[in-house]
Length: 91
Image (cartoon, rainbow, N blue to C red; front, side, top):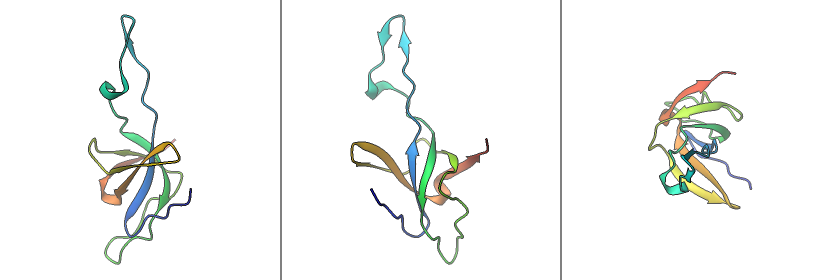
């Protein structure tokens, strides 16, 4: 896989959803809360009005409905604008 986002867009790999059971009942994938954290895999060059401040490897928080979901090689990724990122998580 070789994806290079354009302009002020970033490619994010969402953190895996946690497996939860309630009293022995397994919650199906469709009912699981989507993760709001992920890792930046690739970034665009930015625009003349907005400098790219994110870099590959950053752990980020993003809004619940941010980005466009894409599937490549069986993996799900999000492509979103840099301004959809709410914060960088420092370890």
